[in-house]
Image 1 (cartoon, rainbow, N blue to C red):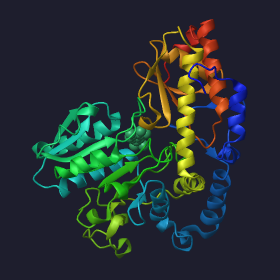
Image 2: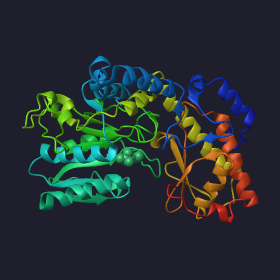
Image 3: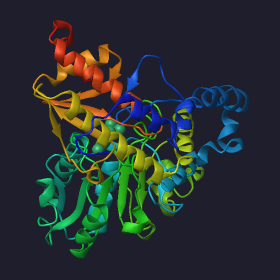
Image 4: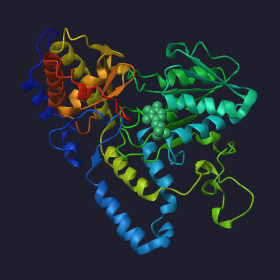
Length: 416
Ligand SMILES: *Cc1c(COP(=O)(O)O)cnc(C)c1O
């Protein structure tokens, strides 16, 4: 396409017809009249989730009762679902468990990193990291008193901020705000060259782009189950510990599910070998079953095709915003190069909150992040190129008519 050729809706319908991932859309239960651009915050509902939950409730819980911990291997779910997530993030089996929340897993693994790197006290992160990642690190530092310190620098200063005090670098690979991607291999190498460990937060990476934890030699990682993995609201998160570190960690949240023999009811904690010691309490069986449906669906998709479509959709959105929405004071935030961004685009506007509420009222669902970012996520498994066109057409209409400038769009809800 020539640089100044106009993009037409017809040309996009042709791209949808040729899309190798088009068939996945039918495997989601999406409401009519909605263009869902928030799969980066809460993934859509896989059609298989409700029947699976009904089976687990009626057959497993209802019939087998407590026997199901053995007969249905409920006990093995964190490892089983973890290994499946591992296939999406380049982790060989036995290094991932699905458990707890991302926040709790961050706490566990930041504490582990300080243990693995004794004599060093600095947790290095970027200023614009996701707030919970910062809060958890701050809480751990307070708990440890003088034993640890949090150092925050700009995202592009991480490598130069590495020194012999840094125990662990903790970064979110894809920024929740701008969508910018850190180079996992380069940062991991630079940190390890200075004998620091790296803890990656993959919340906006898994299911959105190829990740190769083992290939990069990463040490530790965490991530979220309810975003691109489509695991459902509040789905269990996951954590990764490279095999070489597993048996050196003495878990700070030493719960009975991470004990070597939980049903020995021994009064002394003895950690289980391997990744299992990272478990704490009883697995949330219903939530793990729903998450497994989302992960299984994602595993059927070719990750290369998924990334190619994700880059095409975000490029298209940017091009259409520039083509259709000039003169409205909307700026593109984040990288212009598809290779440097995840599966989302953020737009900046001083009235971003009201504009987003007007979009949502018109069936285009994205979200808003203070102070002025409208976020649009593009989940390649259920979005079409024509959806991107229709979403930008709505945005243009709202800006042209000033429809966003209405009192009902200006009251902030608890979740934005
Ligand atoms: C979504 C997200 C979280 C969520 O943490 P919870 O404990 O599940 O609430 C954490 N970190 C990042 C980077 C996220 O994007």
